[in-house]
Image (cartoon, rainbow, N blue to C red):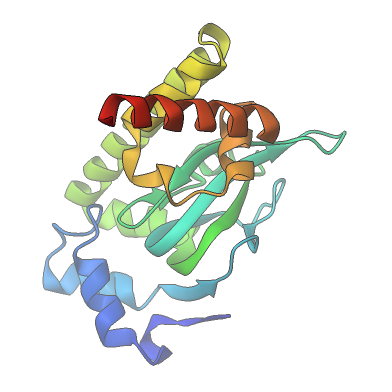
Length: 210
């Protein structure tokens, strides 16, 4: 369900969460009020698609609760998860907006929660009026791009166990929150392989604690 932030029954607490979002924390009161008028709140459930792959209705998302994931699907129906974004993170269609193209991936809810969003045209216009926010956003986009490249390289160079170990080191806060199907998709493993590796890791930890 979507509704403007100004009409949401929890708008006061949501506004507070938004002021603490790393991308928005440096906005002054007037700038935040300007942005708040543009935001739409969506209470999403796991598996709900927030943005279709190939869509031209490009949006900027801020995660307030739960998890969302960026996924790509092949013409044969195979799906791969490129990244996850939890509370305090964001998802964007910036590259597609810059190229004036359709978005190359879908944005899907991975764990029920709440996201705020606005169109990329509104977000771009807002950033143009607020250079400090624009610079902060561009810095985060560059960092995100590097993270995606590092992950792609890891899939090529690391074996299955090393991929699982690397993810656990980089994002320990997500390990217990993801369903195995989503994590397996992200690591380009079958669910069966991931389950076997997880059991092996648990066994190693149990022996180390004994």
